[in-house]
Image (cartoon, rainbow over all chains, first blue to last red; front, side, top):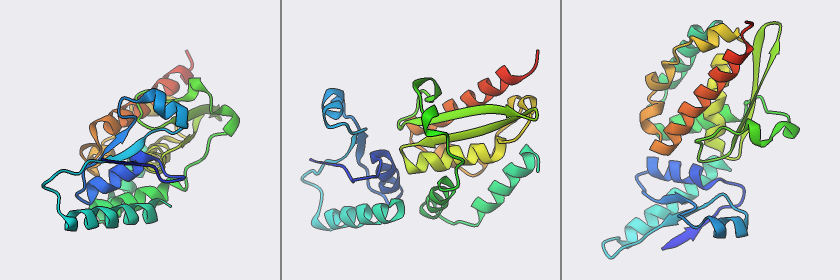
Length: 73
Length: 138
């Protein structure tokens, strides 16, 4: 699992654009509100990889995140 | 332009784009034109409940018409509330209360939002209408 934030961009915005590019992630506080409060962030984007994910899909995910950041930045 | 004409203008604009990435690009651009709320008015009572991100909305009356300003910490949300404000800003409270905001489903926005974000959209519309209702002279 990779949970990440992007400076200056809300996790829900990234999640929305990843969804439109065919990538499913979770966004939000993931039931860890005290942790989010501690870091003073509204939430994170969380990608969960499983044994059926391929390297190509990981590359696709990274490209989709980069595209999302360029649209939102 | 009245509310219906403003809605049709938005529907025509969205019809230009083929896919939802292009539409979201347009929503993001529209968010940059959002009439921003006075930062000092970003208080708890102006937060819209039911939104995944924080959205503040303020309404005031000028010459019997509602003036709307807003802000959000999420860019796409800014675009969405920007669309609502574009349609409903500077309108009479009675017209806002009885308006049928069909453009939201006509451009496919409701079905393309996640369930929680769609709930947030419903909350935004409800908040604007409640503010308009309270501004109607008794």
